[in-house]
Length: 421
Picture 1 (tube, rainbow, N blue to C red):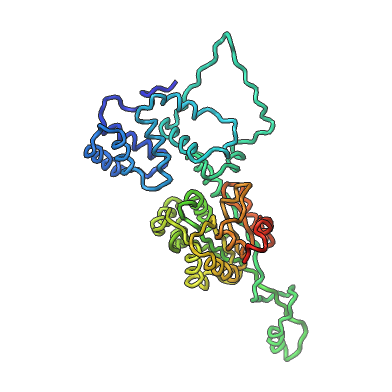
Picture 2: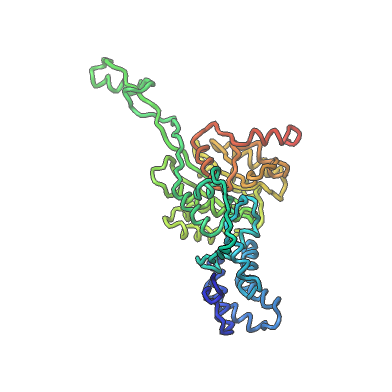
């Protein structure tokens, strides 16, 4: 059984040492905690005092938590680290294998798992053995179970632990995005072609005294389209947008993958072009640069205004003939739906295909009741989910099938003719 001493939690009463170890636990759980924030936390506790637990909690919270989704993880680690009387019992219960579907876990449960992993730091508690006089035998029918990788493919990104997210990113980096080439209006000489090249025939005949012995033929050139991705980075899309940016980074850095170029934009309250940042080979450096460039991360949502800016300033530059647009958003718009509908209509007319990736489709009871969703849906070519590895694999398959519509037909039936106007 793992003891507190084995977890290397100081028992000497030095508060600064405990805060340092607490900061390390937060960092292992995914919070961006560095030495500067630890020093600030020590100074804040010295200024606020240690007589009141609430003051102590919020002093550390102010120094270590910078985003809303970090609060749940901080709360769990604070409760477990600072001497919860049922600390070890809670740790062991979290590390027990769960027979329930992980899809049913809520965000708070995922935060508890990340907290336990950060505090245990790879050490698993040894489970007590049953008494010899009363041995316990548990039989589990595993005939319908799947492997670890198959389970990971169906796990929601928002419910993944740190290790599971790292493995998911590894699988995403291995994905290939095949897109079928398009026939261009331009042609090239080809004696086996199906189009007569009259100019080439005349030029050839001039070298033969004006006699035509054989027709010159040509065929249409083939070229690959561009991918243009518009990724929502508002608060409701934070976890999914980070994974989708890993997906786009893979596409942007895969040489000879079957498309011309990947243009990437983020939007929340403003539109940001991050195409240059995603071309960096190191994915961590690329996403850090993209996060620095996009100043509205985890903010509000103004989808209609941002799409309007894209149509006005960028569509003619990046939406070349045959460009495929991937729109990644939950469609929860707060502005007027009329502006959003007009922007979506123009975007769909400028693109060869407009594929909408919406994480909310993970819910079986999802219906286009929100005004933003109802305004956007009629103008997309394909409507797809984007909440786990399998949904991204389906998106890859949809990119290679021009006739794919995803769940648009079913959603349009739920929308009804009255709501489309």
